Structure formats: C-alpha cells, structure tokens
Length: 403
Image (tube, rainbow, N blue to C red; front, side, top):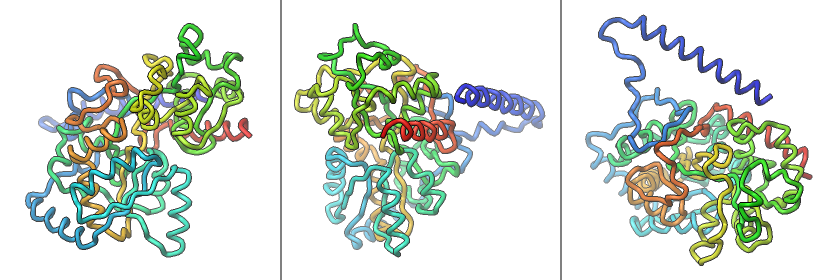
C-alpha cells in the first residue's frame, strides 16, 4: 500500500514538472513564470521536498499600520482578557507569562489540551451556543477538519506589525507558514527536529541499540514507552512518517506495535519514565517535557536514536500552529496576542520557555533540534499531504493491535 502511494506521488510530481516545462515554453516573451511571485526562502532555511504553496496573496503590512495597531490595542485593553487554548504542560503556560508583562492590561487565560480532546469540546460548546475561545495553538493536523467546519477566521488580516509580516524574518517567508489548503487560517511558527525515539543510554547502550530497525528486537519487548498512537498526536504522526518517508511500511508498524508498548497519555509522564529509567526507550518524547528534567540536571544521558538517519528524525511544527477562532469573545485582544506571539519578542519568550525552535530567523533556539540548513527534509505538515493518509492508517493499525 505504502509503496504504491509513493510510486503514485512520484508519477504525479513528474507529470506536474512536465506540464510546468511545457507552460514555460509556451509563455509569451517578457512574461514572468508564476513561480516568480513566490517569496524566496532565506539562505538559512532548510530545503524541503514538499514546500507549502505560496500561491495566495502574500500578507503585507498596512501603510498606516501604527494607527491601526494603536486602535486595536486600545480596544483590547477595554476587553481586558484573551482566552487561549494550547498545548498541555507547564512550560507552555510559562511562555504565556511574558505576554502579560508586555500587556499588563490584558489578562491571558491559558488552558492546555491534547488535540484529541479539544475538538469535541469546542464542538459541543458551539452546538450549545457558547463561544469561549479567542486563539488556538495546535499541532499541525488537528485544526484541518475544524477549518472545514468553519471554526476559524482568516489569519492574514489580523497580522498588523511590520516585523511579523517581514518575509526576511521567517524561514520560507510568511506565506510559507500558511499550511492549510487555502493559505488563510493556520500559521506554523515552529520548525524543529523531532526524534523517533529517545534512549536512556545508561540502560540501552549504543552498542545494543543504534538503528531504528533494532526496535523490533525481542529483547526490547515490554521496555518501550510511547504516547498513545490511537488518535492524532506526535507518535501517530511519526508512525505515518516511518511508513512513508522512513520506508518501513505496514508490516514493520505491525511488528513494532506488537512489542507490548507501555502506552501513556501525558508527555511529562513519558519523559519522566525514560529519564528515571523505568523504560529505556521512549517514542516521540516531547522535547518541552524532556527540557524540564534537563533544567534540573536530570536525563543528561537520554539521547536520540539514529538522529542522522531519515528514519530517525523528521521536521515538525509540534504545537507551533496558531489559528484565530471566529466569533471570539475578545477579538481585539486576540489580534494583540497573535501579533505579539509572532514578533521577535514573543517568539524568543516562547523558545526560552518551551525549548522549541522558531521559524523566525532572528530567534535563537536549541541547536540540537534546529533544522540543518544544508539538509533536505521531507516537509509533510501541510494540508492534503500524503502524511495525513499515512497517519490515519497508522492510527487504524494501532487501534487494531493495542487493546
């Protein structure tokens, strides 16, 4: 199945290339190819094989942005509050504290959710006529069906600050971060390397475990902890990635999922299990949760498995996607928060608290998870990418095997 999907994708790409060449040859003298309108990526941006299209109009700062901004901030202060739904965990909550220091007249109410929990919650609320949220910070895949149901407003009109709309500040430009099909609603502000597994090397030395395929060794049965892959989440996404770009396929997934995994629903619980040695192997351990233990001097010998191999790591936005909820109770405060979050100040505060990497090129993040500008990554976190179908298939297999 996966081999057929990859073959189909390759054929489709060839057809698109040939059509593009034919169209270029047929262009009239002096005309510009359509791709010339696409903002160029910064020299420090990693090359990708599946960049999101930037065919939509590129967001630009308004000429009288200062007056517009002052008006929005004044209205936001009168609202006095912004409600944000985002990733679970104390580090993400800590990242929000910097906003209240910058805008003390606007109280920030932050609630953490797993993606699988937020969608049914907000759906039930809206069915009951309740509109409680202003901003949603999400993983990449959870918002797509919510976008189709009309839960969000277009984001570009809410972007006001020139530094937020400056292409030179973003890896791949501003438009490169708009990853939904319409390039209007979902903006990725994070870009980091995620590793398939973190290994406690005190318990599983590299001489015994250095390759992803060795995870199938019977010696590791019952010794692998993982976030629950039976619903949308980072581990399910990585399983889909392994099946596709990682080239492992469905049979490999079935054998791996039959290794008696210890399933956990909380990222901090998973990180602690590996750090404290209850399990030598942790699948898709959240970097933010692991960072908390490392700040305490713990987990220093917890290392990624096969970090230099395509099957060992992938590029991801994590919980770094921002969306503007429609019918927001504090619409002006929502705009202030989003502009602050995407500013250099906001992104640096986010990175400092969460130990993630930003798409902003003027923000410093952890070097160990920073994308290598010389490496070509498979960028699949765009709506309609093959990874979405692979994720769903991986979830179905996980439900079948894990009881």
